[in-house]
Image (cartoon, rainbow, N blue to C red; front, side):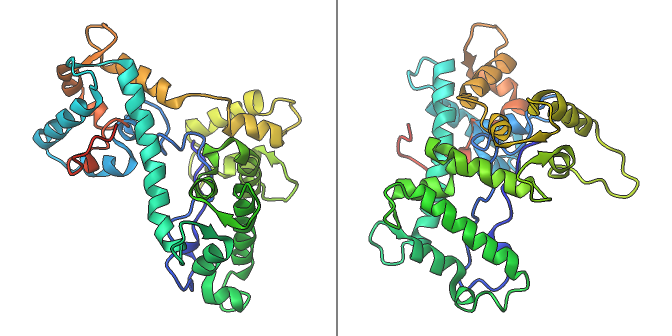
Length: 316
């Protein structure tokens, strides 16, 4: 079960400026999809990996004929050597490109809201004033959940300072990207781990026990049976996550869980897509092979077609 980003400040009433969706939690595989990679039940992970998260939603609304037409245009973009086939290298490059584009577009969307003086940088005060505005001056007295609001301000400030590498209180574009997407930057890994523990740790002991681990993903309603995947997650906690077998996940174990080394998810997804789609086993995909697996491909990361149809410049 993927870690979800925590609720955004936009969920709290009373913010003077509508706050763009701000990620407060870090996905273990945030870069490709929010869904589990489980082809036995759904191809949604692969769908978002091929198409991109937002565009995948639009793709599902197209007719089969429209889907094939747009998918054909995407295949042409991926096939950079124009030999009529998509190789592993081309597919890997495309998926990495979609990852980068998602982050760039997300930063672009937020940038204009926060760079109030239009100097190409975002100071902490600009971010703070835009996000919290009037209610910050009144110490959140008019906000129902003032404790949570103050906690989020403190958390934002801590993350901003960690992202601000030169400590001048002003974020360059790269530093602001690290603030919004800390999981993408090595120097932000400690803050990712700290925030994850804070979000799941309910008793404040700075560790995660089995009940907290499962409770972050599943809370049974009255009479509801526990799904099989919960049993599997409990086994993973006991046998894999809890390395020292003390019944808790500490910071180092959380790091191994959510930041499991330099795993190239784009490379793994490219291999997976070729394995599932390559009928003649020649290690590459033809347009006919791709179109024959529309059910699989259209629920994958490659397609991100929504912007491709209106985008005429060479994205790669």
